[in-house]
Length: 77
Figure 1 (tube, rainbow, N blue to C red):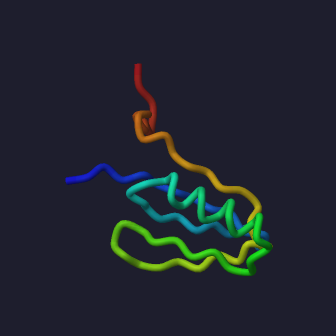
Figure 2 (cartoon, one colour):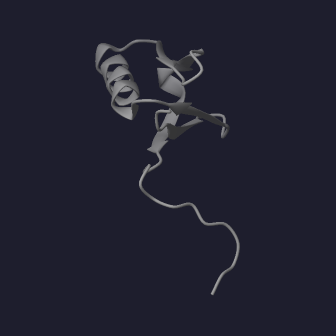
Figure 3 (cartoon, one colour):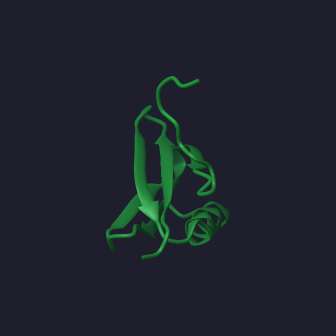
């Protein structure tokens, strides 16, 4: 099974999209190319094959989770 990377994108309406991708570089390149070209919508594909359209002018930030970091929730000693 391949390792996936979780991606979260905030849009101007203070809502976020969160989905997993196999290769975050492909998604980063698509967003950067869309911004450079002045595109209205950038399309990316998640691990399930779903196509997600993102309105470029609505982007507030893109956060790419580091796949090497361990997520810890709660308290521990």
